[in-house]
Length: 179
Image (cartoon, rainbow, N blue to C red; front, top):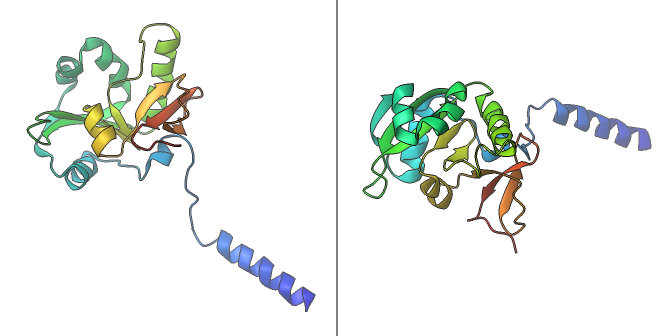
């Protein structure tokens, strides 16, 4: 009887291992939800989650420099596959949507952390981050859409934090506070 039970458990474990069930990520951008890998997916997500994203306008890199300033744009440009703007509401008439390239989001985190360490930037970017994308209206993204700030050397234990891909940094959302 014991052999049957052991054989059953082994078979169950093998079947469960081959079932294709994916473990949820607990760190990095992958822990922020499903990866959005096209601008159409980001726009669709914005429309569903924010209740709107009208007048979508694809933008070039020169426009990014004008939108967030040349210094910040230089920090994002190497890692962004494409970007666009849309109107979410009267309160947020022009929101920037950044889509990261391949592993661009991880490389961006490393680059931003390096810039903080070198004293080139003092804080995290004003964007809110999801898996594979960022929204320029950080307050909209964090407060209303459930996205996360990207912060380094952040230690507030009352704020929901997810370890970022870059050591020493986290994705934080103060709307998900802990005791």
